Image 1 (cartoon, helix red, strand yellow):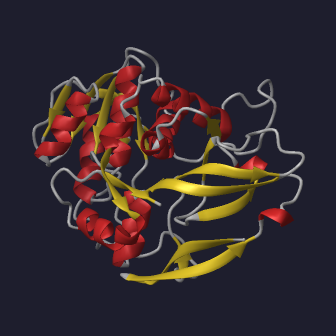
Image 2 (cartoon, helix red, strand yellow):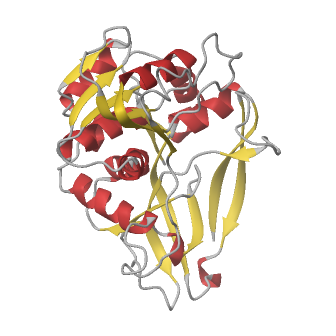
Length: 326
């Protein structure tokens, strides 16, 4: 029998740990039992819940599980499982918890390469990957990234690695330096705009000023890929967020990004699914082609998750995200 610790958020800044019991002897034929090695914090989603930001959609907000970037080591598998074997590291969307049982279909990546902290941020890169894909990215495109948190940095890194010419925008010195390390050609403060417009603008920020910057940076006929939530927790904007000289006159396309097909369909039916995308990105990360470790500011004991949330909420210099060790 395994006692697993599970984190719940009962309300703003109110953490609670509960214990559940897992029985390896009662695994179903397609189930996997694994112990978490590290789980990464997804800063936008988790910190917003931590500080009590307005919810994005109707419905109960608390209590809630936190986290969906979990890397665990397989302890036991059911008789029908072929996706992994004991000893493998598996990446799943399990929340912050010390151990769990899941169906083998929930495993996104299985590997024997022992780089759990780097692997844990794969989904944060995937959000940028999904945005670039939906925006029709091609090598040679000029790409602007507005907001250099974990997701913005991931988008800048991927666009650069895939042959884009990236200009990254942030008012934080450390974030701009990190964007350059990850391959951006330029990194600028938000009021320091280049004259050349971008084919694709990836915006990961929530402020209305960031939204107007994204529209301004887009070239005529360009695409704004929206990964942030413009106006979340803010009063109505002072400017028209679809001003005709920025939106209509330039004939921009605005696309909501981040969601991709999750059904495990054959590749000839749906080539780019969540599972295949994650396998591709994990392969690049584990091979060292993508510097995923750059997003992990530190590895902290899981019990210090409240400290990690506070540091991220305060926008501590140099804090992109944290991995939690279990």
